[in-house]
Image (cartoon, rainbow, N blue to C red; front, side):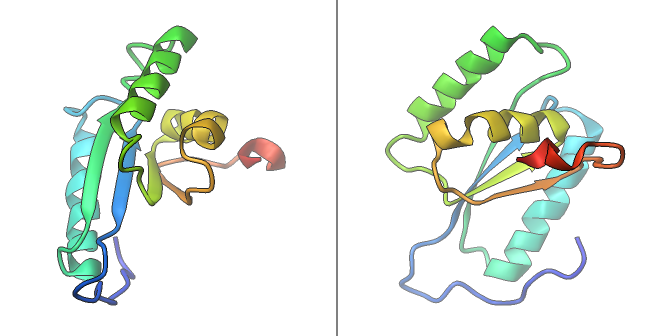
Length: 127
């Protein structure tokens, strides 16, 4: 992940909490490579002062709406007391999941994404 920021989180400031949601499962080679690179970049940029939580949709195995609704409820409960400050979608299904549910789960939380092909998508796909 080239071009990482080099600013450090000042001592005494709360560390940023990031929630990274992958579209696939934790053993996917793509997830593992991205995870290593993303963590290394955060380490360099923030000097190790961050909390990164990872979750997995397993969207290829469990694409049903009921399963995703259950995942949303689990995330709401799990992060209710300490919500993330940044959402990261790793893959198209994770991005769609957050786009549909971010306002009800983590309103106002910035969302960034990776591993999403936008070619051929209508311009309003992200709205």
